[in-house]
Image (cartoon, rainbow, N blue to C red; front, side):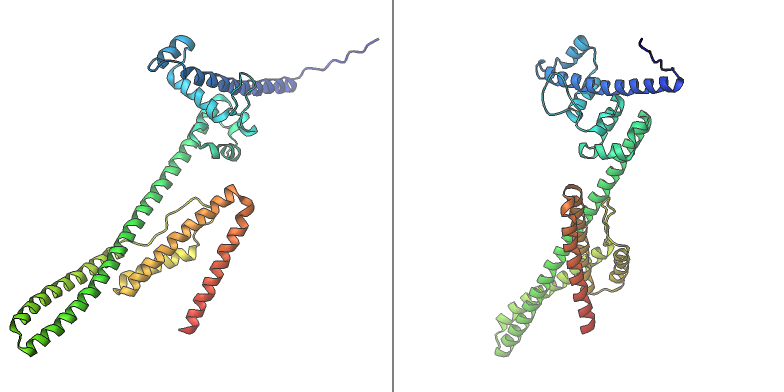
Length: 322
C-alpha cells in the first residue's frame, strides 16, 4: 500500500511560486529579446537600402526605435557567437535584468555596466528609478568631461603664454646685446671722426632701443596674463587625488605670484603648474592600472612613493643648505 504525502498549499508557497515564475519570465524576455535582436541584425543586412522601416512595419510590426533597442540589446548583452538557439548573456549579473532595465542600462558604458548593476542593486529598482540613476550618471560624467576640457584648454593657454614669455626673454637679451654693441661702435665712429658711419649707427641704435622697449613691454603684458590665469587642478573621479596640503600650497602660490612682480616667481609658477598637471596625469594612470591590472598597482604606487621620498629628501637638503 503506497502512502501519498500531500503538501498543504499556503499563501507563502504560492507567493514563492509566483516570484519564481516572474523571474523565469523576466529572464526569458531578455533571452528572447537577444534572439530577436540577432535576427534583426541579420535581416537588416539583407533588406535593400531605404526599405528597412517599411520591412519592419509590414513584416514584424516594429517601429525603428524598438528594432534599434532590440539590436542594441543583442550587441551589448548577447554572446559573440552566431547561433540560432541557446544565446547566453555575458554575465550572471546582467542575466537577471528585465527587458526595460536592459534598455535603460544601454546608457551606461559596457565596461562599467556590470559593476553599476551590482553597486546600485538594479534588480530591485523600478524602470523609472533606474532611468533617473543612469541620467544622473551621464550628467555627472558630462560635467566632469566639460571641467577637464576647460582645464586642459586653460593649461594649453598658460603653456602658450609661457612659451611666448620665454621667446620674448630671449629677444630682450638679443636686443640688449645689440644695443651695447652699437653703442660701442658709435663711440668708436665718433672718436675717429667718421660722421657718416656715426649717423647710420645712431639710427640703428635708436631702432634697437625701440625694439628692446617693445620686447620689455610685451614681457610685462605676458606676465600680467599669467597672473590672471590661476594655477588649478580640476576635480576628477580617480580614487587617488591631489592631497589637500598641495591644494593649500597652490592657493598660497597664487597669492604670492600676484603680489610679487618678479621673474623668478613667474618662472616658479609655470614650473609648479606643470608639475601639478603631470602629477594629476600620473595618478590617473595609476588608477587605470588599479582597474585593469590590480596585481601591478602596488608596484607602481611604491615607485611613486619612492620618488616622492627622494624629492622630499632633496628639498629638505635645499633648506639645510640655505
